[in-house]
Image 1 (cartoon, rainbow, N blue to C red):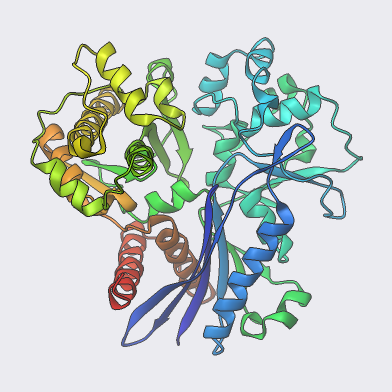
Image 2 (image 1 turned 60 degrees about the vertical axis):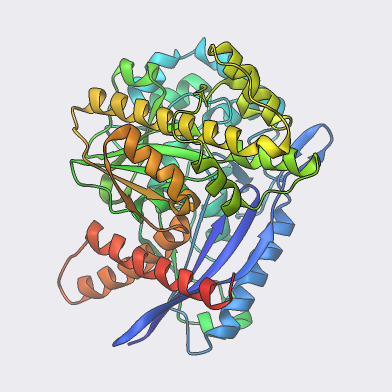
Length: 491
């Protein structure tokens, strides 16, 4: 039988809605049917997400998908960025608009909470890197600031909220739950010790759900609006977008590492158990939940946002470099370009990026590069060489911490198309580079839905099945279908 699914990927800057279809003896079809912008809004000194806008745009995306698949859609799943959440009352009604992770209220929350439970203890329990915007510190700030909440109130991270909005029960999907920094990494359960230290109610936390969990049908009002989804199942894929992307790589062999290469870079490997050593904490590694109970042991590294910020500066100065032309010109400078630390704090801020990079080059003992747009290829070469060096160092650390010896690196995300950068990564690391899906989060989301539907059918027939290689294969088919659709438009 033909099967269609809707995958919704929510980013902090944009959202996308994918329609994917599988049918026997036919190539899988996939297309992005709707895109929308996203950005936080300022209200009364705080930074919030516009919930009504996001609900409306998601609904428009489902409108578009339903109109194209009148034969019927089997499932719908949502993934998105981590940490942000929304408070609901006991009846499921929204109590306040959701705060953005960039909201300044958490600037003092982290050191305040560490007086109750030290950072080293938090890492030993969760394996999660302490960042001031983690859900833990946001919830702690709510309590500290005496946010008025009625008895029975609970919270949901945003991807699970949107599933709940459409009719699913309130759950916290495992890959997203690990990002709260409140989940015991070994027990895979909410940590009572952390909740107690932060003064938070364990009863307010949603129940946990595994990635690929079928959550039931859409609420009646949505089935009436979208007859094509009358029999659809709401599915929690890997609700954290990074986890959906890593699931799409199939990089779970012992000799294989992954790199999700985009605005940010996420580099690491798949483990069966979290690595909770203090050395891992000191090195900046985090243990994120993965599919099948696995752990994605990874490090956040600055990414191609460095180049995008430079391109904005060069465009403002009079030359808008097309990306492919700039990459080709950078290749003429070779990998001997000067290297700077890509994770320097100043490089995490927007604006004047060429000047910021020059300051880091000077601190590293290199002569500054010309700032004129005509010299952009030289700075681009420096960015690529520096990223390749940072990835190599991160993989060396991951190898030392886990005992793994890598021979392959699967690169997914938008950077998988950057052949020059990937060639320099191969040179610097000595690893075989393999290309994963460019639209990795969407591909992983849809692949997990198809796998969950198939697993459910097998279970009904008295069998069980869950195969990561099959997921990666499916994600590859979805990615290829998207690439074919893009090529067909001449884009």
